[in-house]
Amino acid sequence: MPDQPLTPAQTVGPFYGFALPYEGGPVIVEGGELHVHGTVFDGAGEPVPDALVEVLQADGEGRLDRGLFGRCSTAPEGRFAFTTVTPGATEDGCAPHLAVLVHARGLLLHLHTRVYFPDQAFNAYDPVLAKVPNDRRHTLVAVAEEDGFRFDIRLQGDDETVFFDV
Image (cartoon, rainbow, N blue to C red; front, top):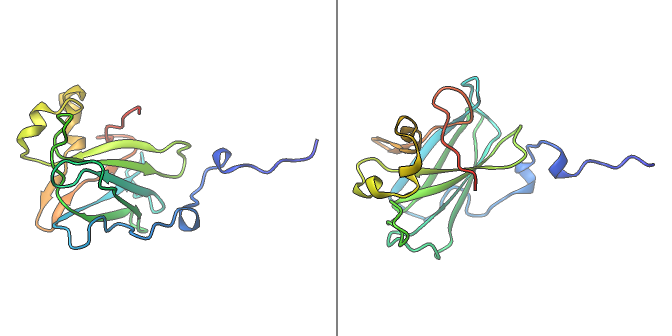
């Protein structure tokens, strides 16, 4: 039997530099007032220089049909950043949040998580956040900083980000 080459599903990338270009990149909304940045860390606490972070979100009115999407490759220091608008609470009762997908070396499937924002009254009633144990919720809430919000993604280890089985 002749050797068969591996398919992308059987190999571990990263293939992001040429396989997943996205014209809009990390600017989801030009001139948006919301800036979210962070670092992707591996299980040893080291930055992941070749991850890909994607964001899907509702618009300011909570509508999900506006196609608000962004994609950002991490820098050599594992950093990523997005510019967008503050999402509104959605009709399904979810607090304002960003849906995040993470692609990284060693992962055959991408990871799903969310970014919630501090001091949002809706956080107390969010049906997804309510299912997360109290001692893990902080991994889903961004930290307010002078230049926006910081949301670090920890793939494993201490303070591992909560990922959802979607």
